[in-house]
Length: 426
Image (tube, helix red, strand yellow):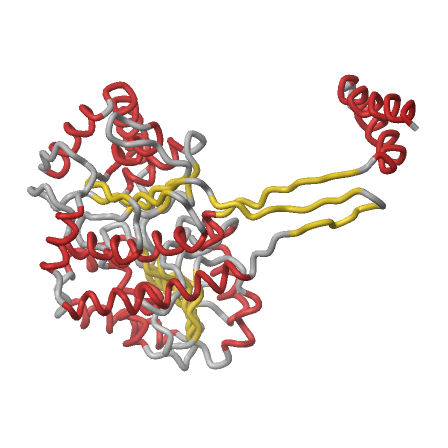
């Protein structure tokens, strides 16, 4: 393995300071409620609205500001996302009357969470596609109360109209003009205007991610999402122009985004670097993309695809692209990724917007232990069991012995008393 370009290390001190700042925000929201939210909305977004809940009139005004073409595009993407979510849900089946032994019946139910908040980022870009990606799977899962929130456009009292329309098309039950770490705290603990939820999902900046991490336990979360990532595995058949374009697509998200190329071909490596430089010259978002590529982009030369696969599994990237001659030979070996894009025709951005898979994906190596957001994120698999009297004779000695072996005598007695009482009834 050879680094042709290597990323600089992340700043640990900045992480420590972020943790302290977010903890203070959460504390203030818990202590001061809406008053703290008003202050933070003004501080971070120069927004002075007093009612966080978005009215029907505001939604109607937003539709008037969005073109018919944009609305049609959102609906088309929404249909693909909904269809795939419904297909995934159909794979999750209840289980009834499974017997581990005679007359011991086990099973599970599939129960949607009662409420959730779908956090749609604002920031540099109106990421209205995220509204579709979050809200639609929640609705398909059967969540009774689907709230959505997003920060107002800076210097205004309104959510971006495209984001607001997307939230409505996706089917949100409630929409709130609120974002940031203070928004996460509000939906976790509740305030005068905001009733707390059971689950918070969605990406955001580093403050949002840290707030989700600190509020976890009080509220469920999908995962802690960090900066956007893409990793491309390429051999000598790959097109450097396409690789460069796909890496820049992620690099333009923010200054901390990470693009990685792992290739078996040195010419592809250097040609991709040159293509990056050429494309950056005409890219309107080059100020962000160039810095993230300069600071965190990597190009790694490996001896063969086996080494490339091993390295990719170690990175566990959010997005993984496979641009090799025989991808079917490689796919089974890839086990750590948020979403996989097979072949150079399959652009990662297709998944970002409209193909139907979800773009809310694990970052920072979280793909080692979780996949991306999906309809199952909003579902609980809850077990149950039933046994009749005849099963007790077999079950009690086993359970009693194990409980006494652990020194938990009351556990043992809870089993034994049933045998004693029910045997008297026979």
